[in-house]
Amino acid sequence: MGVAVTPIVTVTLLTLAMQGAHMGSRVVASLLALNLGASLWLIGVLIASYSIFQLAFALIVGRISDRYGSRRPMLGGTLTFCAGLVIPAVWPTMPALFVSAPLIGIGFVFFNVAVQNLAGTIGTAAERTRNFSTLSLGYSSGHMIGPVIAGVMIDRFGFGSAYIAFAVLTLFPIVTLALSQHLGAHGARSEPMSSSAFELLRIPSLRRMIIVSGLVTTGWDLYTFYVPIYGHSIGLSASTIGTILGAFAAASFIVRVALPVLTRRFSVETVLATAMGTGALLFLPFAFIEFVPALIALSFGIGLTLGVSQPLTLNLTYNRSPPGRSGEVTGLRLTINNITHIGVPLAAGSVGALLGIAPVFWASAAILAVSSFLSRRDRQDE
Image 1 (cartoon, rainbow, N blue to C red):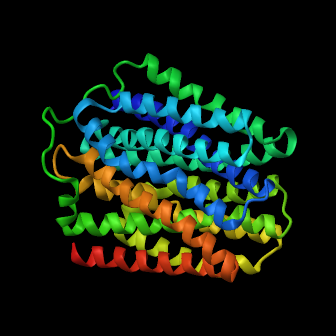
Image 2: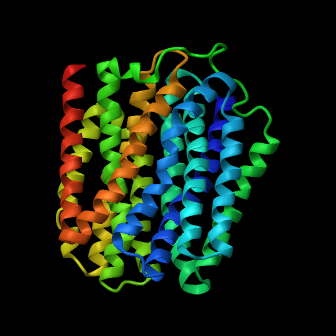
């Protein structure tokens, strides 16, 4: 057990640094684009470009990590990610943002697919739920520190300094992965897989959970994309917007610490369905509130509900993966998620420009309600 703890803690710290830089860079990109006078639609295109190129790589990275291990794609992805941060730091213009976003997106998908597959292989099957819960703490911590760092750096030092701060943060995973020769060095499959990854969708329980993961990701994206825009529209500072998003991330961290207790008392599917249903209700009034403490409280509540989604869907999809294809399943799940990463900002930008911000939050509520229904159905079919 002691042998398994050190790798998962190391992997979680690497994930914290990368997720913090990823989330922070999205906030900086949105606010810099607004500062440059970009329209909501153009900002939607910008945020979607983080994910467009990920569609071409998620499945490939999954197969690579299954066969060759996770370390090399993680290291290569982190180096690419860092390069994407440096470009707008020295050239803070819209063209630079459109060069930066694909590099950040590609780098992050290489790291993300590989690290999630690696977490599932550490330790025994009995330790897998704990490992995914631990890994999810790295994601939630990154969600918490990224927007806060972004807001503070922008207000005090400017947009370029914010990008540099996140580039420096990525040096930790770069150095660690370069020196850790044995971390994720080996794959679980010796031969290439000839069948299509999309054949995995023929497994009903796996297909349903991948759909739920995509829906939850959509709700998450709508929230993180539109909170900065909504905050800007009501005159909030970058630091205040960062604090609101930080409350969301803090709540997701807290609920993930308590998650093992919840899943021991209730089924994983029940916890997931209840959380998504509650989250749907909390999204409804968001765009009608301008009182900052109330926005922080509501953001905290939404964080509690959405915070359980990632570790639970990670665990459920990994457990339902065929032997030797867990990386491929992870890549497939993230491919579906990335489709939402692309479509949601574009659709939300268009809807927001035509109808205003409130309908976007209502759409988020509807999406979470559907994911709650599918999660309950999954439990009934078990």
